[in-house]
Image (tube, rainbow, N blue to C red; front, side, top):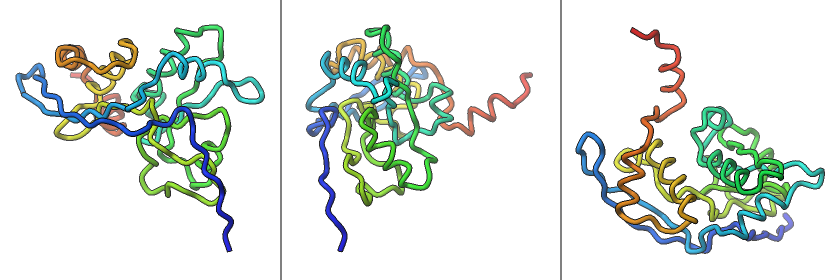
Length: 210
């Protein structure tokens, strides 16, 4: 008979979210409707401070665990965890900088359990990585939607990667307050054009320039 393990909740867990649709116009004059999912309890000064000061037992920095990215994407700055890390470090420069970590490609699943159950690490996504059970044997800190999850949903018909990251950075700069329609349009207009997959990045880097 398996033993039921108590599931711990975290101050970084979102208490639900509000789903909205926003409409904006891209540089090519295409009108797009995309989905935004704002947490009901957005991050604040206290959670930012906790991210910076509540370190691992050995004094090392937290790891910010993103279920939608790989470590390769972290290196390429294609993850919202990089934006969180830079933001927190700019506010508290005297503390070790939090380290973004991608959970895509972490095998076997019990390695993810180990990362989650480390007291210093914080889950920053909306849901568990694809193919990984939400609850695993022995895990005490399951992958609940995070207050720091990216509200600007990337999809084929919605936000591109560049648009989503631009808006996430703007959301943080605005104190995690809901963005106005004008701010959404501004964030989209100033977004960098980024390849949508790592494979596209590699292809772009290896294709000789004409």
